[in-house]
Image (cartoon, rainbow, N blue to C red; front, side):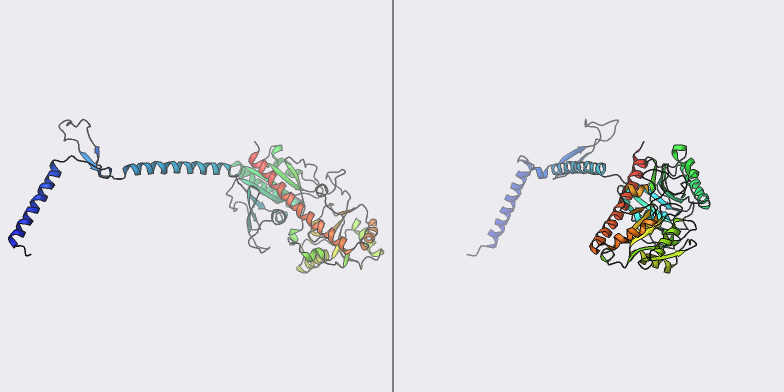
Length: 441
C-alpha cells in the first residue's frame, strides 16, 4: 500500500515532537542517578565557607572526573607497601652479606712472587717475568688482594686506593736493608698522613736471624707495623704479631710454579738422588761430595758441583736443574749459611724427597728441639732428616730396595703434603691479616 507523502511528513513531525518532549522530561523532571563511573569529584580552592574574602572573587570550584580513583588509591597504597617491604629485604640481605675487605701488596723482594703465585695463587699480568710492572688481583676468604711488583713500582707511583698494605722486603744483607728502610719510611709517611691505617711486612730475614734493624718499626716498639712475617727461625716469632714465613723457591732465579701431573707421579725415575750446587770450603758440602765419590754413587746420582755461587741461572742451567729434580727420587739438601734453603721447596715441587741436613747453623736463630726448620717440622713435612752425610750410603741402600709402587706412593704423599702446606700458609696469612687489620680493637 502506498503511503501518501502528506501522511508520511506528518508522521515524521509527530515522532520528532514526541522524542523532544521525552528528552525534555528526562532532563528537567526526572531524579538524577549518578553512577560511580560518572561521579564528579569536587575540589575546592580558596575559602571553604563559600563567602567572598576582602572583596575578592568567589572561590573557584574545580571539578575533575576520575572514574578509577578508588582503584588508583588502593593500587598506590599496595605499591608503596611492596616497595617498603623490598627495601627492608635489601637491607636484611646487605646486613647478612659477608663483609669484604681490601688489602694491597707491594712486592719489593723476590719472595713476594712466592707469596703471590705459589701461596695465594694469584694471577700476574703481564706474564713476562722480566716486565717492569706486573700486577694482579685475587680473593682469599673475605679479603680482596691486589698485588704490584717490578722495577717500575716506585715510591709515590703506586695506585693506592685502600688503607691496608702489605710490604714485601728483603733484609738479608746491608744493601738490601738500606733499600727496605727507604720503603718503610715512605709507608710511615703514608700512615702519618692517614692514607694508610694498617701495615704488615713480609720479610726475607737475615740468615743468621739478625733483624734488629726492623725492630723499631714494629707497633709493639712504638712503630707502625702491625704484623711481621719473617723467614727463618727467628726468636721473635710469637704467633701474635710476629709469624714465621717459608723461604719458598728461588723466584729470583725464575724458578716457576710447578703443576704436578700423572707422569710426574708415576714415572720410573732413573736416578736415586741429585745435588747441583755450590761447594763451600770447609763446609759439610765437601763431605757430601767426597762420600758420593768414595761410595761410587756418582752414577746413581746426578751431581754438579761448583766452587762459586752464582746469583742468576741461565736458561740452560735452570733446565738442567729442573730435569735433575724431576728424574731423581731424592734431593740432597746440605746446609748453607742457614739450614733452610730454596732447594727444599724446589724438590717438593717435583715430588723429589728432600734429604735434609738437620743441624743448627751459627747465628741468633732460635734453638731447641723443634729447630732448625721449625715451620716445616710443625707442618709434618715428610722429609728424610740426617745429622751427618755419612748416613747417606745406608739411606741410598734402602732406596734400592723400594718397589716402584712404594716410590710412587711416597711421591704422591709428598706432592699432596706440599700443596696442603701452601694452602695452610694461605689460610693463615689471610686469617691473621683479617683478624689484626679489621677485627681487633
